[in-house]
Image (spheres, rainbow, N blue to C red):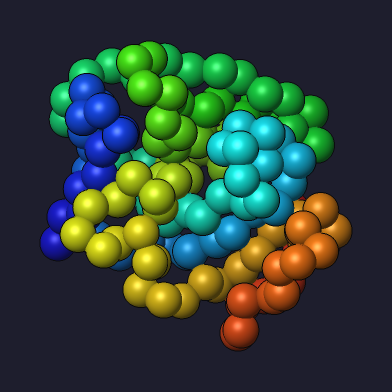
Amino acid sequence: MSTKGSCACGDIEYQFTGEPKVTALCHCIDCQKWTGGAFTSNAVVPRESFSVTKGKPNTWDAVGASGKINKHFFCPRCGSSLYTELEVMPDVTCVKAGGLDGGAASLGNKIDVEFYTKDRAGYLGASEGAKQEPQFG
């Protein structure tokens, strides 16, 4: 099985094979600033199963709470957030679910974990059944 996605303008396309290892929401301030939203929704997939199939994304590095780099990939034309590679998790890619095609942005209507719940916007409740982590890990 292959899941495909793209940026808003279509200059960047990507895909991953198989199922996500985990589905996660992240409420950290970095994710809020990067997306302009209250959180990011992520399909966390093995890095070797992920590939960019069209275009070349730009990157921006943020230093996470761990002191390690969070490398954010985005479209140089439209600015869409695409995916993140975390230095603390070198074997996975965190694909931003909003860019996934064919209804896959819903992440199968199941969130496994929410990170940085200490930073969650007050108007949002916990996702039913999701593990709640005040920070990462």
